[in-house]
Image 1 (tube, helix red, strand yellow):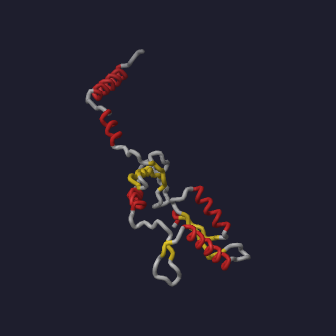
Image 2 (cartoon, helix red, strand yellow):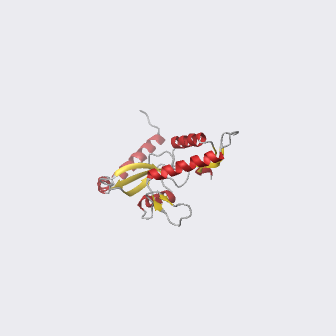
Image 3 (spheres, helix red, strand yellow):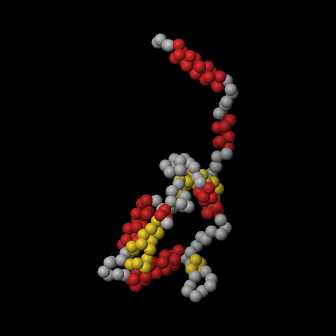
Length: 182
């Protein structure tokens, strides 16, 4: 192998720089040991999607004893690649808030107070009201109703949005919108 003078100088410079850096004493073993100590032990890991805007950033959630103890951006997610904006970082507060409503609440017409009801009751009330409004406002000529509207959210993935749209169309809903466009 024949080296020209310029190639020899480049190779010699790179070799010298590599040897100099290797003598700086940088040792990764303490860093690896520290990362093992600071890991979240005994926590279940879940992936989720941020629901604040329509970007759909991925999050990794660590849950211990039913409580969210750590939230970080999902490095494997194609949209945010591990980063979270300030809104996404505050998602940590949502499931841990003492003000979070965990059961359906119902306020009867004319009442000034809310009462807790079961999930079955809530689903039944909503289904009956949708059916009632649809039947009262159905346009036989257009085969639709203008009294109902439907809005999707950023926390829903494409497949869920597709199913919600199919359901809304089956109900005859003409006003379909999405959070990203509002």
